[in-house]
Length: 388
Image (cartoon, rainbow, N blue to C red; front, side, top):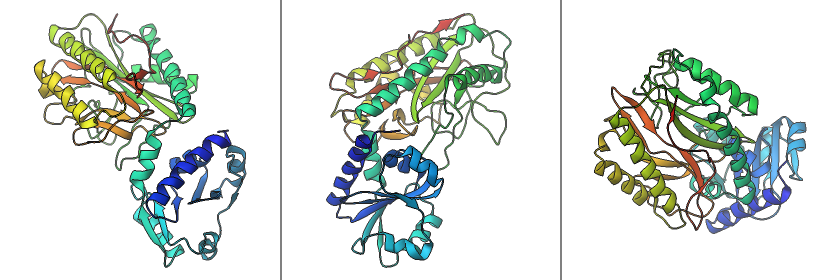
């Protein structure tokens, strides 16, 4: 169970934001937001007033919610006609997260709350959750340690003649046995992800996922991740996986090869390391995300690799780092146009990668926490290519 003091700090921070925006409270209906503020991922709606105790209204399971959450006021979700009476009469302007609330749900709550104004607080919520507490950083460290332990086992099972799918299955088997929860939660509409990617010849392919590498996948219905392609010698094997422990996600990538890599791939990998080193040094409070991304693009350009930086030529991702926490796509994003400063406690996966058609995919990824001294790395195993 998450400590009550941790939950109260999160609630108090949100209450301060609501007051600043002139709102009377907020309703949270998205499961991972409810979890963040309550400690339970049961099906419910959370009312956060601008002062005083929050109220969690649970559809299912009320008993499990009371076991999981330290909140003192947890009740059954009321009948629709009684819902408005649960909230204070004076609560006229109510925040909700429109970024993840379907129109059907917004219409539902508008009907439950006639005469009240629903206001979008998506940005406030994401800003608050982007700064991790000491408790959250410890959860991320645990996640990073467990995930790193599986990467160190890859030389035990990566063999010539394996299909990408075989490699993915071996990796995921060990990851799940370690206690990985498997829910790679994402906030963005129309994005989905399995535990990760284990790709080689199928890595240099086009796909819908908003990332540098998508993999070919197994069908047009699942065009992402490992394919049935056989892993070839002298071709980079790109393994990019998430660790999900106690809800908290870390993200990392390592490169393996059966044999050797050609000079262009080795050059691209060294550039990836240089970009990561630069960004790690710059992950300090006040650094502007957009400027960091553009600096990384310039480094790729100076190395003659701009056309294949962060994706297949013509379909490159316009970011090199993304926030991680309870979701894979949290704020902040080290991205073009994201002109906001970093804050101490931001947790970010940095992933400079290159996709070279005809040769493969290569790069590095680690998860860091923003500190005054630069990025604190929490996926801490060697970066070097593993030659087998």
